[in-house]
Structure formats: C-alpha cells, structure tokens
Image (cartoon, rainbow, N blue to C red; front, side):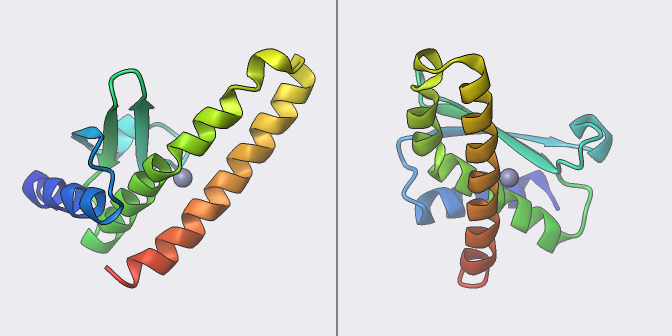
Length: 123
Ligand SMILES: [Zn+2]
C-alpha cells in the first residue's frame, strides 16, 4: 500500500472517530523495524502536544494494513481512558499498579480488537 493511500486512510478514520484535536504523524516502515513482538502497528499519543505518531508496516496485503491503521486509531480513541487509569500510578504501590496496568492493557486490547472488527465492516 502506498504512503498516500495509508495517509488517506488515517485521515478517514481520524474523521470518522472525531479525533480532530489530534495531529497524527505517519511513519510507514518495513516489517523488520517493528520488532519481534508481532506488532504490525503502533501509536504513541502525546497529550501535552495532542500529537500522535502512528507507525505502520505497509509491506503487507492492503486489507491487513487497513485493519492495522483502524486498530491503532481506535487505540488513540481510547487513549483518554488509558490516561485516566495512569493517574492512579502514584497512588498505588508497584504491585497493585502492575496488576491494574496489566489488566487494563488486556481489557483495552480486547476492546480495540472488538471495535476493529465491528467498525471495520461498516467503514
Ligand atoms: Zn492493539
């Protein structure tokens, strides 16, 4: 998939999810640069600047790339919730924080996967 097409898809999902307050920078990378943890995309929201960097592996079939972009944009859509959860970090001991963080991350991933499937069929 070309960078132009990827960029257009990012804007489409950003508009559909009403993430207008975010400035999303796109980095298309080959597969090996994304590491060995099976991640085909990543997004790093920075609330201080309301910017996010989206990294996506584009050397794959178009449908897989599209699904990854949607998945990562949905992570951006729920980033506010993650930020709220992170406020508890300083109030909890490391053990409790680690349990909460891990549980939250599993729940967020399951939600994003569910939304990707549902939303992906309608856009
Ligand atoms: Zn995910």
